[in-house]
Image (cartoon, rainbow, N blue to C red; front, side):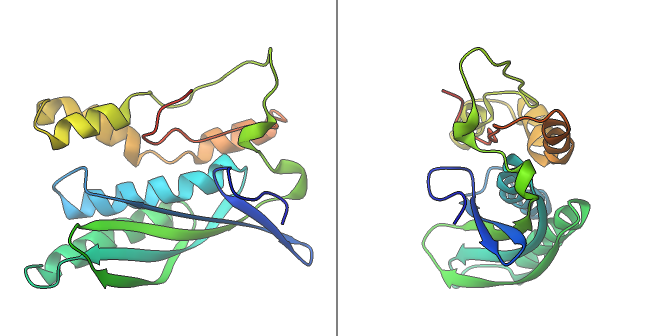
Length: 190
């Protein structure tokens, strides 16, 4: 193990390959299943990008109540996710579903990273420049939207941000010889 618990993802060396492993599952933040699937995929691969890596595969994790669920919703959800994974250069290779009282969706993602490109959340030092590549506050705004406290039109910029991959930011960080990175996908920045 090169990077363990407490970072955005784990990094494990297998022979000459450095694997990046992560899992992310979230509850719905938009009503459209295709868009939610794409957001979940972007959110899940973001941890691989935060480590300086490249996502390769995703395994879907879906929890839903089987009694009253439309199969077309699941198809749209998976279509959105598969399209976003493809945009990231990864592929959906399978998954698992469980019956659950609350709908949730996400991925276990596997990626690779070059040894010299591994970025860690703990790698920052005092005095270094902090670069933020996406707006802060998405978690607050999506929570407010779930409670009906903001208009859906105000949520559009947040949705656009959540759909944007962190691929370019990750490549820029590696090219700049950064040693530290994290993704900010809803928990804020302290």
